[in-house]
Image (cartoon, rainbow, N blue to C red; front, top):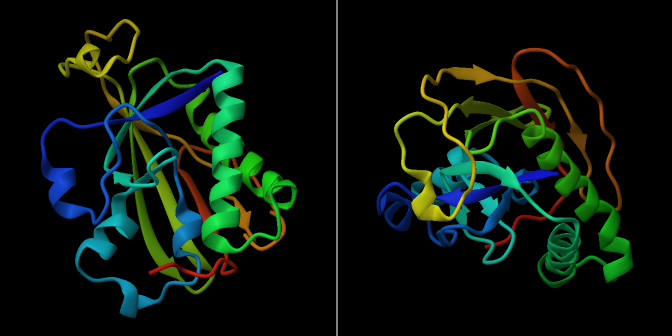
Length: 200
């Protein structure tokens, strides 16, 4: 099983995000945070988090780049529990069991995004507001000259890398469940329909 860890090449994330993710922590898209946002919310550091931030599942901070690597099942399950508890603590889910379904779906989306990528592949996300909600698109960048070993992300680096994208669409309702639709192609994105109250 594969997931992705936060990676930093410089100190820029500490300057552009209100709460930067910790280097090496596991991440998901976290687009649900923005499902009720409007253009009025998109300013300053909040706009940067919306536009290009992955969500760390430990600190719940944001990061610009993540790197694909393998994850063991016990750690994956612990992260899923942590995310479910986050939905209870921050978004008012009625209980941990009720939140588990949403947390599992969010984790599964990230696994799906990572599963066909080589270890150390970098991923970035971009978002935009549409009439249907938040639209997310993902880009994969094969590891080239970056020394990822310093971030404790293991795997052989490709000597010759190139950019490529993946694609499917997901509709989300982050109230009490998800509705997923898939459109597989070369552009990877999904849309978050309104349904989660935004947090300050």
